[in-house]
Length: 477
Image 1: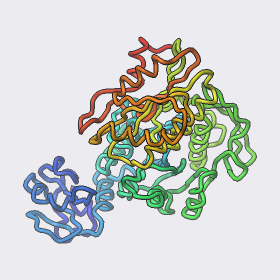
Image 2: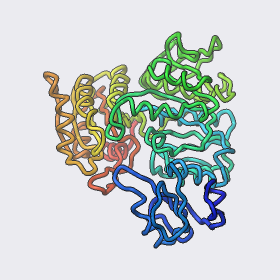
Image 3: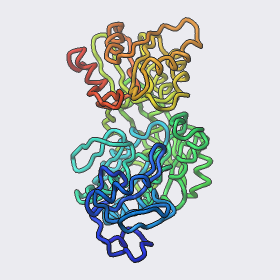
């Protein structure tokens, strides 16, 4: 493809032939268009010579710098990368109806619910998110919650070729802040909630919130919806005039009524300005009712009727690693991705609604990530559990003992807490199961559907659910 088709202001270099787009020198090959991106640790401008040596045909830079190939200077290489990636894959994103969900918690569950709703309405749907990329009956491993622009637009192109017409995706705050979604017009965008997370990257809650709100700028979508019970709803309404609010209170245009919350799921009536439909979901917890309302609202905003949307919710089969349950003779094990203080609190509250015996919580916090939430999560776990076992999550390059000590600082603010510290996650799970008696519930939180544990740069195979099944000798119902 010619350079002028990818970059608007490329001067006399427009006829340069481009064979692929890269921002990492490991992906550069003969004919690549190399984008210099400034990151937290590295600056792509420092790697221009390496990119040229590997065969780059042209370089997009934010400043004048020596290069042995055509150099095009632009004010924002991240924005330019996203736009060029879309163009390289023949603007497939423009022909797809794309739905994006953002928020601290609930993104994955909401996207799977919305996928079920859209499929029930007769559409061919693709999904992009934390758990996986899914389309055409195939499931592919996810690299990031929101892929980098080059990968993202390649996925859109492959989806379109396979017959997909509608795409549901998660939009992370990082992706929005780093402009990975620039150039995409969304059919519908949804907001779940905002609570503490990623402060290692954003620094403070206001910066984190501003990143989330980027998705709701007027020129990004045709329609938006938000949780009326979250303070951010006011900000979203001021950014986008076409906003539908959902929730449980009278201030919501789409609200849930007559809730019946059980261990196996929830039943409720959806009231949309007086039009009512009964529905149910297979996941317990009031917070999952909010996720369902978000999915319904996003669908309604693009012309799907309330009756059809509620039917789709009934067909939702769950999302891997989101309130997954394993029942066996000693009780119930709940496996969930909850990795923030708010997420853990919601999970524990849902379990306490049906637990007949004791609640045992196994969890850890990720290394090289937001440290401020660690003691808060420790305190929440201790307040809402009979026993807490603090263990490793993905320690990455931190010492597991240091992470656990941060969590323990929160636990120790309470008196008479029954807890254990066990850095080995497998041993922590084994200990929890060995303590269980009939009617007890063990929560294993933090990793959800992840298939690995990351330690010092190495991802070792591990999955909470698979390990539980191994310990109890197969799934029981």
